[in-house]
Length: 350
Image 1: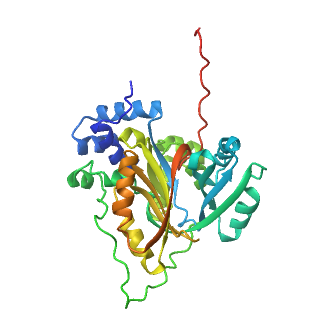
Image 2 (image 1 turned 180 degrees about the horizontal axis):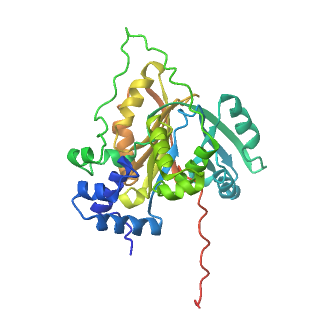
């Protein structure tokens, strides 16, 4: 039976998998000081129950894609079906209902800036029940991707992290250019091009990041050796990373809130870097629009949220205004959409 809370070993396992989603159970067992069978049994139990799984995900920036933070305002009775319609799209992630269930928040990915207009103007749900849509381009990610909330939780020791090949996130803000320094343009490398076989393999990994090489070979037509080599290449060039999908409520966090902040341009980099170090922040980025700094925040309860907003957020440099919206329902995360199982009818069972 799965408890409604992760125990200490569950948390260690989640952190270990966040550091290396495809790490052999034997290596995880060595780092955690338990047997291989203990790790395998616990992971399998959670994986079967749907309370923990590893996802193989792609980095949009490395592929030259553009991400948009979209807010859709709906009539109350239409929000759920519109949110589920958005969630079924392959180019959306992190779909949720906020603001009393009348607003949908989602991240949309376009293959490039030229295709963004088609995504936002033509492909988003167009029904009379949708009363407004706003979208802002994600400019810079301060925290997220392969870095999860569990990376900042202090679950594993530095020695355990080192054994698993990871590093602890910095405890302080990243350095930002001083007033006399001119930041150099970050053009970055050219986008990585993927072949059809790559995409077939990535589709499988998006559903289960620990899919064995033999199954990936069957999906691609490659040999297991080619699969291993291509996996290493995609990770090395930044296309592929592994994330752990887990229920944050089982960590004891009862409140998830989206924060949109307006920050003075001169302070945006410093505010974002400071925000990334907060233990409450699961994701943070700079965006276009009047609210140019966004964060997804988790707290244990509303009292803890109030303390966080009036202390850590209040201390951020350059914050002029702030808007907050609690998440009412989580519809889709970083991986493919999984429809909720139909409720079993009440009454006698056969």
